[in-house]
Image (cartoon, each protein chain N blue to C red):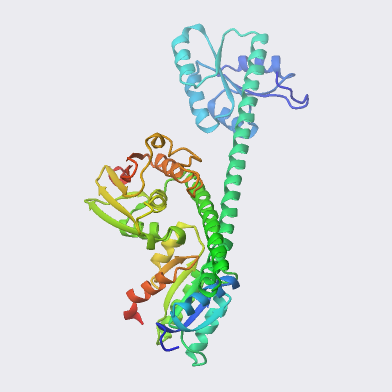
Length: 371
Length: 138
């Protein structure tokens, strides 16, 4: 039994159209519980509002509304109190229906006994209390989770500024420093800081994707590709990239712009990272086919490709193909998660030495919005 | 320096290291002949207003940081709007920021005074490209 302080009695409301029943109920339980009674639903609702009872009893057979109807109305406004129906045997079908629909926690048949009601109140309160605790815990967890995410985001955000400064300084050093040994060291600094920058960016993308809401806007492919290029880092910069794009569009594309941007950024960054050593520039074919139902994006690179045994694994968190390849192992995981949030999907086909093709499908929300 | 692409460049950034980096990159790539550094939007605005009185040269190029104390980049642009109507020279303006927020990219695109938002570290080639594409504005 749930422990509770002796001074805090359980608050019970009893609704019945017969005043005699109300009087005997009150007389029987007033010492143990804080009992409120009402002989019509209007009074019952005003008691619910002011006194917030944890357990409600109602008679089933009343002139204007039935107990089940009353409970159904109550739970729209006050979902927390536990509802118990008091009824004669004749209403069995109504009761089964009410319990199955979740309107009623349990029922007690007339004539009730004092002991039966007491047990019912205690059990109902237990349930009330447990549910409430659970809800508080969930709220607590959600709050902690959000704070943690926000913290990670703001730290990552603040890290970006000094990282960018260091990368800028290295650029200046590569212009101004003439000594070979120092240049070599600067190029190593550059490399390491780029990895750090990439990791920070992945964390930021991960956070952005973790937020539940989908923000739908009209997606302009030109702007999208421009933003994707803008999000590339100087280490994986657009100077290392040649994009062939082809857009077939016969309708507006309404989608989650930022998530789509994240997906393409990671795939194109990968194309640059995994170009063949003898390739001067990474070559990427981008094909958009935009229909009213779905948007298909094919991202084809001509790089080193993916080993067969890795194809199944590349979307897993922290998976990294080869140790010498830079990366956090988050990129494609974020891609998959972002697509899952949009109700989309991704497939990959590849053979080593022949590049990889990612086949993405995203629902076009434009048709859904106009139905 | 007569062989530079543009004459006078204004760097508006509260980060002294980034100002140093941007100055060196602009000098090295001969993007502008002369560079003036300012710490925030407010002092940039004061500078621009002094050009209307003929007290200082009007910049041809402005690199504007986004996050700055007192007056940030977008706030500055609201006042810039008024200044640019009075000015005879319309500078080429790039926003330069380490921002990761996609909304900033969108806001920058919607602002007609910004040629482009460039992310730090600055890629000088993108400024040159932007200058070429907007040379009719010069």
